[in-house]
Image 1 (cartoon, rainbow, N blue to C red):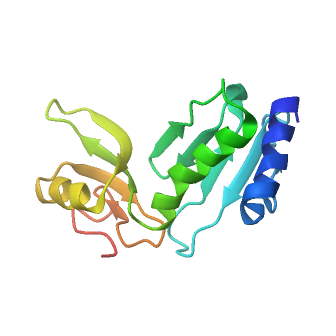
Image 2 (cartoon, rainbow, N blue to C red):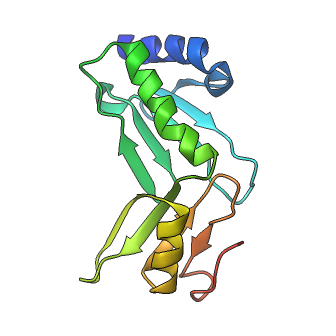
Length: 148
């Protein structure tokens, strides 16, 4: 792993050792770190933390986020990462892909309230939440509500 990835792993071990368990080089890009946080719901994908492009990137379900703190010390970057992920683990935020009014999809994090609004309007394509409460896939269940 490169120097940045090693520094992030070291800081993860200090701030969130449970997230650092099993973390190591990404098989497809060994210079980068790959850490996975496994959810309690087996139908929900793991959160992946990567150091691609020497920045922290979080992948979860249909969405990904760049932490965007490259000019900050590693400790601050990891603190920002934790601040981003805690609401997902608490199911205060949901990873979603949704239809725009122009017929295109885009993804991001939405609140449960926004999830309900988009679901009611038929604008939700798919979503994943940590405990599976808000998991939804319009293509596989013909538009019926997910596991909730």
